[in-house]
Image (cartoon, rainbow, N blue to C red):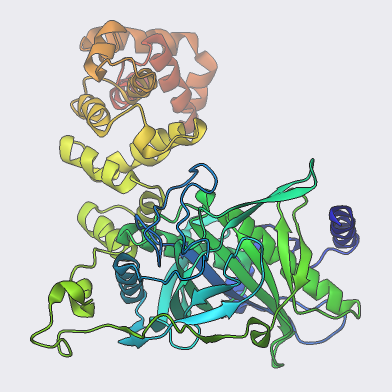
Length: 545
């Protein structure tokens, strides 16, 4: 079966290469076109109206809680198989669910952050389907009356991959529902067997259902990234995609402008923003090519093969009737209160107060970005980069507090130099060998004009080695202090001018750009110990004589 899927996938790619479709352009171009056209993709040679892609998402976020949704079993990533399974998780007869208060609070908090209406009365349902890693044969979820409805999520999208060109879009949130996770099936192809690990069975999830308001992979990835940042800011979910704490199902269809929506396919369990963008864009192109070749789109579930770069069929899509939804008989309605409806004689420890949670919401990423721009005068696109890297905004603010350098200069060192080192070595901000204190110490030396910017970069490279030395110690050891003797610097500048007759003639002829070469040569002579500004002044003075 795997071979069949692979052959079908390869065939799809061959068709795409023979006749490139509208989505064959780079992702950034597709995003720009998507934004400019409102989602329309030019039709092929059919002469019909443009194709309109439609993308909706269902995002499953694992709730950050010490125990599972309906049992006291511990939640821990990468624990030994089947070591965190209670009798209820294994669906032994006579066991009953007990709702986890923390999970409810996390769902309410998330709903409020996404501008949802919180239902004071929500219901639990059983959703029946048979999988080996679902011991009960059903999942407890909230199909009829979920905990939160009718919200919205605003996100920003780069055009042409330029951070300076961004558009803000909004996707509607249909609902947020609490539900159990299933276990995990581990397929051993060598022994032709499947093993089941129930550690994940019963872990609390929030399913965030987004309306089909998106039109390309770039938009879908941007929306999920903003949701991920919100969840992490709230603490309602760690949302680490690599650990399966944030999984995305994408529903994709295409239709001609002015016509009803087409048949949709579901792309299941995508756990990477990059793969999400690729999967959605591939599926849009696949459907357009299929329809233009006279084929039909099946209502099916597909998966994205990241190695082959395409989607492959998994199974037919079950309809609602296949799940046989029914009310969960072992759980009463979930009742929440606000300040007005909370009874006077009610024990506050035993109820969940929506207003109390609302008052304690932290600043969301959008608000933090605005504050960074207003407080430090940095560009809006820089605020997005700071917020997108976990811990980088806090690192930046700590450096600003400890240095005399202006924030607009600090941001360059953070985003270009520090972040460049982190990316090069695949490290997070928390793993950086250069602390905010060490970087601030270095920038203070630069701001006091004790070292040049070239020398500062050399010092940063030494700090990165993590040998426990301070910036000042490295400067003294390697003799990187700026030359304080202006006469000596004038002599070096004159020597460079004497050796570069052609460059001097070009400068006097009006080509001022050549002056940069002379500045560089002086910097080389002084081993980065001269101020480029001062060197430029001295060279200009001597050349005008």
